Image (cartoon, rainbow, N blue to C red):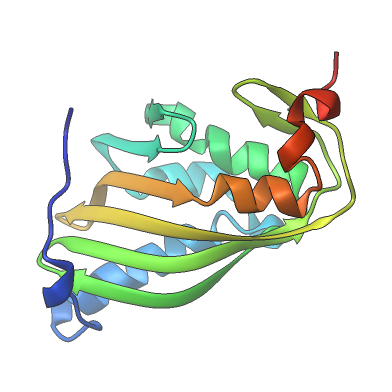
Length: 166
């Protein structure tokens, strides 16, 4: 397994020119995944040719054009999807982001184990994202969403099987 290592204690706000460039890159990436301004091809373009997005909760890595699949899934399920960025930390070529995923569940949410039809409830799911940036492109993006919080916000955490479409 490809692992990311960093010294979080050494993480700090953007200080160098490279860190500020990486911050801008990550902010642009997020902007292209927002419900109101979603641009999946642009989102994908921020990744290196061999770069990937790892949805840790789903246990799946996405490469190439499939990197945009999760952007599309969340935008369809939460048309008003917004990422609230709380803090960014930098350590070498690593960018760590503390954020939340926010939106109203007005479309089907396609999950690895089934489809959750719209609940029309709001989510405010904590998330931590870890990026490895090389030569101005994202080579690795590991996303850790607090899925229990997301499912709880939807009102289905304790009875997920009953919430799935048959």
